[in-house]
Image (cartoon, one colour):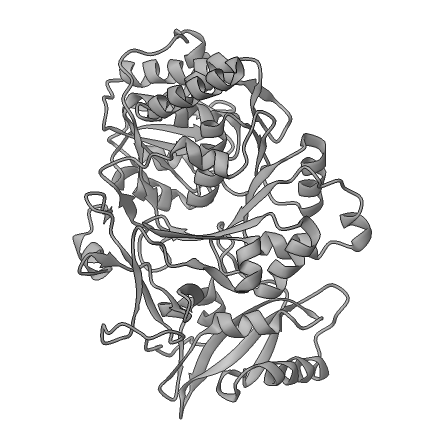
Length: 527
């Protein structure tokens, strides 16, 4: 009975702490010596250590003149300092913007200025750190992580002189992430009110005192940030960082650390599945209880194979940096509706509109629109035109396309900018890729529209082969014949090119624009 009261009391404390950003402090008190973060090099921070450093960072920022509402930028790879800086901003009312450290100097500088950062934490190994910060005159504080940068404070040295006890007057902080910027400059997705995740969410995902979270994707991206880092902090789980994707190393880490929870994207599934059978059989993966995935459409063939391997532990979501209705579907439900990302939520609505703004009937694809939450609508920071262009009434779109079936389940077909228009007919490339990947020789594919004088566009398959297969006209004909067996004739690619790699974003999404670009050189594509 006492243990039950203790758990109930802890839950109440965590719920209260979520309102002022001090959740990590509660866990530091409850389990001070437990590993909070394990870096790729094996360095471990306890909850107590991470909490003390977060308090020191609050004092460092306040000493530099920052107050609640000011912006802090974070430019670092997957390592413990990411968690400490994030925890500091959450408890002191700052607005944090994690920055993709793979961007160019000018792109990083643009984000630093656009988000109005007054402080920046940069990893020393990122060559663009110093020149990008030099282009941001609004910075009051520059801190170097993992080494020295000229003109920056050293992270460890700066924190060593500061008090690690709880900082006064905690205030819940916020975050502003930037879109990928596939067309034009990236835009900040600004919400006036921070998102608070109820503690019950972690219980539903099966977190307990033994949970270990693996973060294998980039920490600065919305999905790993929410489903790996913020989830581990909220649930009191140990967070294990990987610095870059390595399929076998991922399996070895799951076994070694007894990982229970992780966020992955479909291309990671494909690379894991591509490992030789003897490698896959080498590792004990029985600790895994919950895999969440999203960010890009997952071919049903791939997901079936993952469920066969890991068991029914896959949970798919559909949302974006802008938010959305929050579609979710577990493995059991997905097996009844293969290819779906979930049923239309009851709380916030979603609808499918055609090009004239009319709502589409079941099984007819169109642009997906999500209802804006009352009082919590996002804006694209400093871009009212883009904000309004995404809206129809109190609904907004992220440019994704799909359809609801007769039971209200959503199926994604791609993005509006990726739609192939051939002879006036809309063709959705993701549907074609989902079939091509079923061929035994196909590792990955990116179907695109290429110029055609009569039809405007023609369907072309751009294919990456599995190891052991060589490009040939015979194999191309075989793959196209395979497509004809499963697709309507107007969707079957009219030609096929083999490539040695396909461009993907850091979030794992195929960059069709880059695939398509070489076919459209010197011509204008009408969308």
